[in-house]
Structure formats: structure tokens, C-alpha cells
Image (cartoon, rainbow, N blue to C red; front, side, top):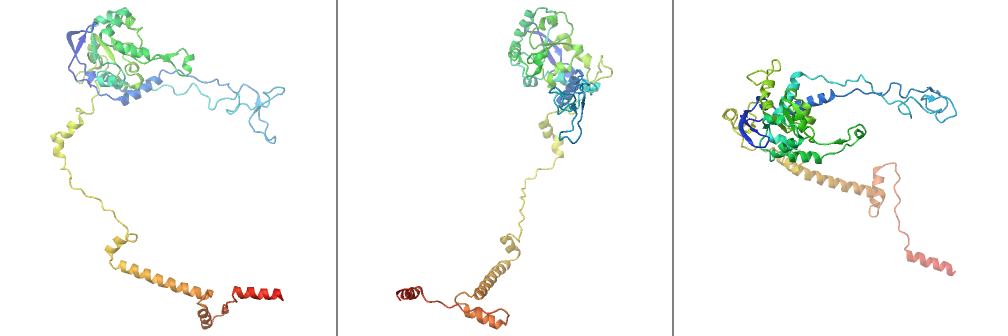
Length: 402
């Protein structure tokens, strides 16, 4: 919020007149972009016109379903013959020349009711934001060379009638760069608005707020991007276009002085609005770092914990041998013994299997074991080695000679 007690007044030549005006209390109102955004959206909805498609659209034909049994869909079909249209599907939203799904009606809920106090809160927040240079620059306005924000001019500006004079005032106040920026953004609209008498769009420039129109509207109205508003009829759609606070405002001296009577202060109620006072900020001091360093808060805080306690990872002793050894040192010996026993049992089991299969070197053992066991299984025949391959070959050759 703008906290300067006084604001300098500038002439139409861009020079300080030496007089100053007291900063109105509305510039210290809390800035609530959330309220400004919601109120702006509802106000934009209130400017809509109802629209709807014709109630007869898509139903201006005689169509009837063919029913079942003809291997076609049961959608109503155009009657008659001798033309392509006959037999075509009708009425449905999936059909050519059919009605739309859920046809729009004029009794839709177009408008929104806005609480009066909420509307006033939004406009107060928007006005307060115009007095903060950082927010004005964040909105995109070129105010690097502007002498002061908020910018207040003498009431002589209200008597200007020529655009040439208004341009001269803007040049002297180093605001012509802002107008050139607006002119450079003029472009064709994307979409169907080009066909509806709103072909071109451009960015917003400064807003001139006056008390009495003695020719000022005629002087400034043809400058691109400039908006003119009477101080008695301030509009949120003009002060915070798009629901974004921080538009560049140029005030006349009488309009600036009138703000206290319109919106009042915290000590004095408004003269034009019944029993209305400015909204109270939630925090009287918004400097959080200063609040945290204050003695009152520091006394209530406990001393900082400088001892670092590291979290110990709990491991599963059934999966981690080192943890198991800490709990049960004999577990390592038991594991080794278990492995040794397992190895011996595996070896013994393999020998028995080899003996049952009658592998070389285990034949006698297999027959003896089978006989000793007294089982019904027949003992395997001993494996006898046949004659070597050389002897077989010699016998074959002898037979062939005979």
C-alpha cells in the first residue's frame, strides 16, 4: 500500500507546481487480488446477452423410425422417395441436419448477484494497487521516467479540448512511450470476432480519472489505449482490466481530493455511501521478518534444538547376518553346522541314487542293498562289458573272407 502522507501535484507542462495533496485513505486499503478477480468475473458475466438455438432446429422434417427387422439402426428416418434425403437419419445429434445435443436455452443462469460490500472491497483494492509502482510495472506499463506514482495533475487539464494538447501533456509527463507501446500491439483478433465488428484488439494504456468534464474527454478520447472515467463512477472493469490489479492511473487534483468523501476513512464514514468505512487490513504490520524478530515473539519461543539426533535404521535379523550375530553370537556356528550337515546329507543322497541306477562302481552295492532290503523290486542285472571294437571288426572281416 502507498504510505506516503503527501503527493505532489504536476502541471500540464510536466513540472511540479510546488503544491501537494494529502494521500487519500483508500490507497492504504488491503490489496486482495482474489476478491478483485472473483468480482471482476461476476461483473463480466452480468454484461452477457442471452443466446440460444431455435427450438425447431433439427425437427423441421417428417421422420419416423423403420423399426426392427430391416438390419438398420432404429434412428428416425426421413420419409418419401425419389431424393437422396429420403431414408436419411434425422432428429438425432449424430445425424446430418439433426438437432444439437442439449440445445441451448435463453433461460440459462446468465447473471450473478454480487454483494455490495464485496464490490466496494474490490474497487478499494484496485485503487490501492494503482499507487504502488511495483504493481503498475508488473502490469506492463512503462513508468520508468514518470515523475511520481500516483500521478496527480492540476485541474487545468480538465479544460483541454484538443488532442494535440493532450498529446503534449503525455509527452511532457514521459508517458508517450506507453502510448507507443499500445499502438505497436494493435493487431487482428483471432477467431470469429473479426466477422462481428470487432476486428482489431490492442493493449490497455493509462486511465485518466477526472472530476468535471470541461473538454478533457474530447481531448483524450482519440489517443489509443487511454480510458476516461469520472471519479464518481469508478468501474472495476476499467481500473483492473482482466481482474489484474495495477493499472496506470492519471488523477486530476479535484478527483484525487474527492476520494476521501466517496470511500471514507477508518475514522470517518463515507459521505456518499451509507454507513460505509474502508475495509480493515488483517495485519497492521505486514513485515513478517520484522514480526519474527520482535521481542514479544522471541520471548515466547523455546531455544533452538542444536543436538542432532540421527534416525537409526532398524534391520531385520532374519535377513541380516551381522545383526543376528549381535543378538545371538552362537547363530553363526549354528549356520555353519547346518550347512555342513546339509552337505553331508546331499552327498549321501546322491550315492544312494547312483547305486539305485546301477552306475559303474556301485553295481554290487545296488544288488546287495536290493537283496538285503527284502523288497519286491527285482535286482538289476549286473552290467557286463562286451568285446572291444577291434575284436568285433576282425570277426566281421573273417566272416566276409569265408
